[in-house]
Length: 217
Length: 115
Image (cartoon, rainbow over all chains, first blue to last red; front, side, top):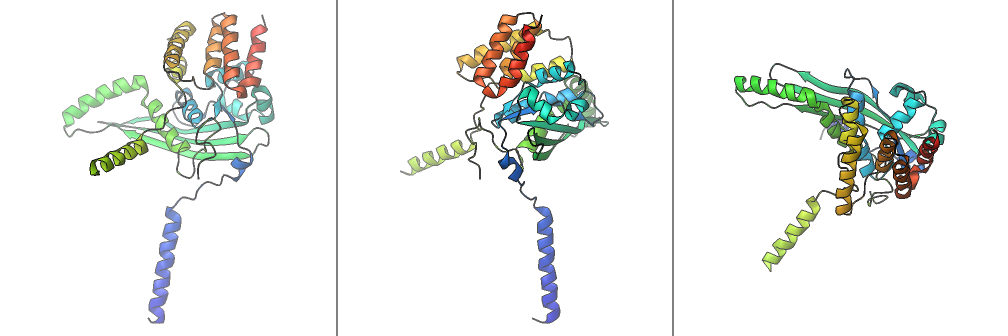
């Protein structure tokens, strides 16, 4: 093997390594989480950066279940929302700004889940529609203000086609009429939450009420 | 012999594929929250209480637990309906089932005593 071809081979290998490095996502670093593992999580209404006003509570009504099923104590989200509103914090923005030591004093929560709703809603095209929900979540320790975990979750659902334009147009009109009442993004939120909390090597670890608590790799 | 092997393999496969058993009976809890915010006034607290109590009967029949926050939520609805005795009972149940709720539930119980 001459010098030139060995350099070319080395560059080729380096290129493959680089590509490989970019393609694989690094597993989440759970050091902070392990240092302050929470038992109880207070979920506040999400900061809504989407264009849909209904996103705030459409999303809030899908997030207790995945977190509680992972094994955490989850505070009653609607009671918490009303409690904060009655105590001078009428919006999610104000609730997210509440001092964490005060939140701990009032609720006893070990950690707060602060979700930002980046996208929520449907885009309607001529014969179909696409519904997208995209969230970013941060779990913060109320005692030390340490970021324990954060993650992203996104889900998209498109109405499917059948091949016939006329059938499509009728079906699309019917689907849009029905869906605009039932808010398809509400169900897509559940998929986004699965991607957020159950992400491989990056999800929220099991909590103390789960039989899998402390038994994951 | 080979039939037994196939049966065992099948059982192992089924066990491997079976969805994990949920920890709680959710019933209509989250859907009710969704409806109260998205269609205010469509359901009154009494409608919500009736639905939740029905879910609770089903959970008892199948010997499963209600999720965290559920009894506190029901207690809050009883409070709204002006039934403090039931409200107190549900809040106490929340505390007994999930001791993590104590600080928040005690705060709600204090509010209950206010006229």
